[in-house]
Image 1 (cartoon, helix red, strand yellow):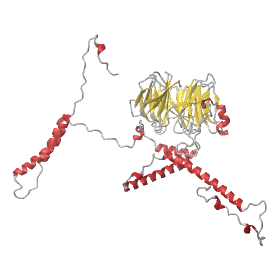
Image 2 (cartoon, one colour):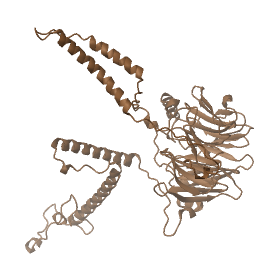
Image 3 (cartoon, rainbow, N blue to C red):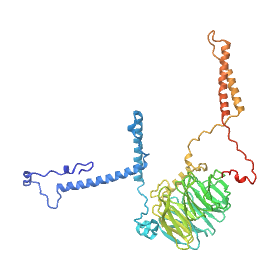
Image 4 (cartoon, rainbow, N blue to C red):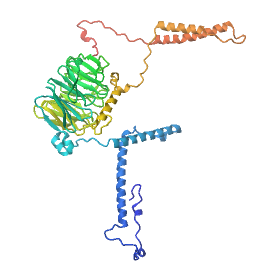
Length: 574
């Protein structure tokens, strides 16, 4: 047997000596016979071969892994160059295919070294079901650091509680209904600040970083810093029910009890927009992370999508035959989950605004993770669904709270396999394997950033701040050329005026004087008439084409029939 890239085994071992060579001469001066414990030349050769085999196997495994990742970045199957006869085209396509292969290989290498960690899910064995695995079993199997992440914090006096994670996943903001506010460092489990506002707290949200956060209180929204100092009171918003922050645009969005939607720029303090939704009071509000469009769920079963530069909603969807109870958007921006009082949970494709799947169930709160898991909270039960392929979601994990606890908010912690739960008796945290993005980008969100890095990031974010006009349903259209509009049909009067102008220009043409006999007045008049006819012909043909177009079908108004014959009339299409 021969190994790839190495000589055959026989070439490494010397042939056996014959009988004449077996007779050994006595060692000369300076030579020593090998002792019993010393390795011979043959044993050293075996060790070298074993090491080479091991290195070759490792190299082959790394090459196979790299090829597998390279296929993911290839742009489909390559062109079949053997069937081409054009040598120039064949050479151009060969160069392009080579460049495609090099770029795919570079992307695979970057993924291997810059994203070394992969997500891991629960894998059942035999007849096991993943949703039957309890948190106690998971905690026993994970490492020490991960085993410290799940906890139960019982705070029965000031609940129910709402919670929010910072974009880096390091900090958690907690708000109790009866005015209790707290901020925690989730890596060291230290309490940064805790204070009491002595007022109803409906919602909490971080601003551009963990230094500032907004709180929806009884009368107005307030902005505090991490030390608990009140910075601003936003009187223009009124009594808010829900808050959302658009980090790329530095916009704080709120909806109040009078169904008014407010957008305020927190970097300048300017109210960007203030609209009445016109669909009644609502406290269901989520932002689409893909395009920064705000989604509102209403009591009539409708979901509306808003942007700050439009008085009317961009989209109005009838999602349920009853009040909408929860809305969640996938991080990719093309999938939306809704739940209603009709005990239906629906998944929607936002590219065509059509329903993908409908499931039976009820949800008071929902949230998508970075890897696409869907958390659903209802009563004292929390379920996590996973995509099994083709947007077919099925139950992945289940967790039962203590009987009597009412789940109010579920939120996945970014870059961690952790789900935070805010309920009527405090806050809890459970492990959900495979929910978080395992590799974080320090330019986007850095859980370990220093004070200097945070300041630099804040300055860059302000310099790169997007304007409210960039918020739209399809942000990829920004930077593209608008297609030309169809030219409006000219009126008859305008056509006549253009024709008269062209005729006058044709009459004023001066012809070059030619030789004797070819410059007669009759010939010059004939040439001028020919130029005038050419100028008229273009407009006459255009007018003829407009007259030949078929007219639109006129709506036929049917006469009203007597009551006895109305049941035989053709019914109108609904």
